[in-house]
Length: 206
Image 1: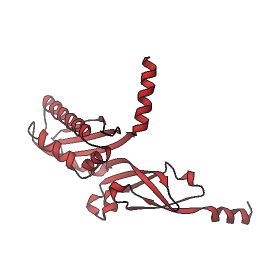
Image 2: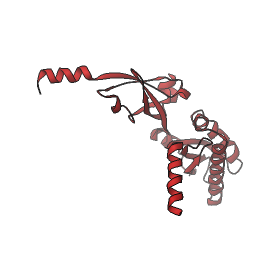
Image 3: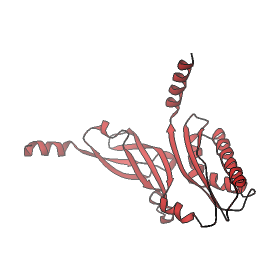
Image 4: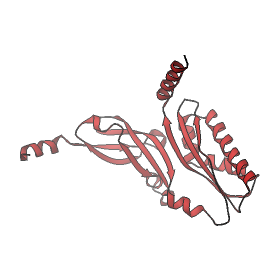
């Protein structure tokens, strides 16, 4: 490749400032290069809640965003995933106690499909019936929250810890709990994708 071609490629590459969604205060996530605007779409950006809030205490929470819109020199993102780090989750587990998990797929009031994965950690080892009751409580509360909230409000309740606190207060009456966390929340489908799937389902049934 000639020096002129290399120089031309460098000139064509532009840097775009990447911003978090509005619900995360449009905080700057960094910058990313692209020679064509189309290359930016669907590019994923990972950060931590601690970096967004300048609080090292929140670095155990990972956030993933995806670029879905581009301005003149700015790339805008949407929320994709909230996840606690493996090291943090490992630190919560204690010998002689129970770890109760659930995997719940819900639809918000504005038709976003989200998978929520709560985990409850007991003070001592619970029996099978107690674990089942705790899991049922987690499922019911996540489903109830989703039917009453928009996607943005649901994610806020996960990130701010309100959902895990509500589950803790309810499930601790079944068996003493040490902690409840939402270990992962993932966007599975947007409203238009959910609608398209429903149309396809109807066609198949017909």
